Length: 233
Length: 203
Image (tube, rainbow over all chains, first blue to last red; front, side, top):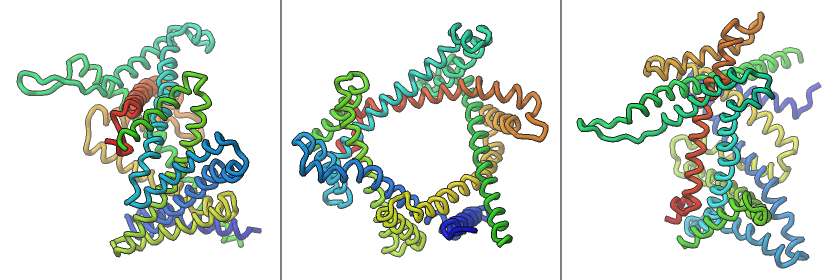
């Protein structure tokens, strides 16, 4: 027994899968219809999530109780984002859009700080530490690996890290004949870095392709299931 | 106004960044981040409104593809209204999620298999250099090495080459790219904090 909600979901899912797969015969109106509806529906869904999970619980729900019974400090703490929200809504009107800059400035400043902290604490330090750990005898002992094997692998990884970074160094000087080239040593390391980057991108490509293939198989299976479902009923 | 917006951006950035290093500023940081989350939510709504405005304008002007814009606006407004009235957890919204959004995403991903294959073939025809050859050779090796076959892993490629390439060679390159991206991001963040870059329109 299929419930109507499940039935609608299955039919919609089948329909949109077929519409998207129609792209294989070329860019066509059916594909565009599916994509435009998808963008609209996704944007509406995201907006409703932003409304119910951010604006309502963090701003609107505490608004009335705080304004009626909260202290002055609590009221101020809530009034600032309320004012900021009003300012940012001014962006809708081209005449008043300038006022939204105040809120945008706050958001950019906050975003910049979060990015700096996230980059240093979440990427730079852990990545550098992980590279150094390959040369730590204690790590080899803890992982029950031969110290030289670990250090050898670490040396290859370190070479990859350094040469990949050098590849993105584009500082160069003009030579007497007018040509612009990087220093010979940098050019050599950059060439090695290109190999490492090529290998990395190849691995990423294979991973993405495998993920895409999995999605394709899942969709094809759903189409087969759809026909089986309606063939049996 | 220009100086005022720059002061706000720098002050917010310094106080939030300070919260990571000085425990005394932790409460201020939490408060400011909470404000930022609310304002980001409001900014997302403004962005959605802008999307509606752009496509409504296209329909009004009778531009080519206006019918698609109409479908987009109808889909957006209907989903937004249902979502705001019923909440995203409602079964009707789950139909939208499981019947339209997720299958379309998966199908688009599926379409990517052909596009990626085509791109790889084009790469071989257009750019036959060391990086291109290494890239494709690695991709093919990893793909063959990852394949699940009836008799198990492909000998040597699946058991020896693939793990070594992914865990040693690719790790070195990936770490280099990641650190490079992190350094670039750090520079961008610092430029905002020093007021050298003012993407909020303070220049």
